[in-house]
Amino acid sequence: MLKSGGPELVRIPAGEGWIGASKGDPYAEPWEMPRHRVTFAKSFGLGRYAVTFGEYDAFCEATGRRRPRDLGFGRGRRPVLNVTYADAGAYCEWLNDTVGPGWRLPSEAEWEYACRAGSLDPYNVAYGLNPDLANYDPTDGAGGSTPRGSRQQTVEVGDLPANAWGLYEMHGNVWEWCADRWNDHYDGAPDDSAPWRRGDETKAPARGGSWMNEVIYLRSSTRLGLPRDTKSARVGFRVARTLVAR
Image: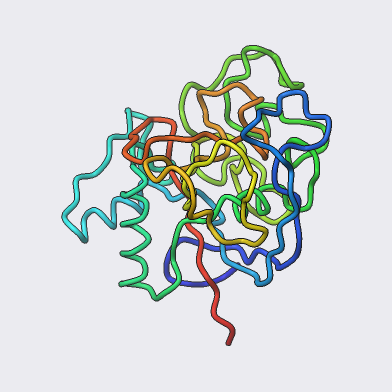
């Protein structure tokens, strides 16, 4: 755990990882390919949890912003909803001003590398997901899910098991904004951890799937290109932080 004064962070180790659809994944989409190797030269911080309503509401109170709607799910430790890409960026800038430098949205490569936590499988657990491991709509029974009803809402962050690197709800609960511009393929994507600055500047990638999606949309490589002004009950975000060597 990294102590920062802002959202709790996990130090993600330097290393290399495959980004994109796993070999033989029957649900792979063209925008998840080609699979490519990315080098993470330095460790970085990533939120242990998605940013919560409690954290975001404190930002709204401090800056005079209107609080986003929670759809009656509750606030506190529920992941914040109905925030645009710009809203997420403004929260990161507020942390830079009040906590210290380095706060930002993660790049897509950072997000997927951290989600996989060393796994090459479609999910970060080799045997697939079920509703005890992730919050999604399991009613179709696909991908090994159990055929019982969905929760029909978000769960509090940390409610479900963490991945191997101690990150919670990387699969499901809410889609999470990433810093890159949107591209519908990986041809020419960076081979390092930097956000992809070429592409459609009106859209940004979101990752992880949500409480409203079928399990196949929770795969580690799944990408969704959303207009940056999207406000949705399915979309929130998780912060990253560039770490300074001491």
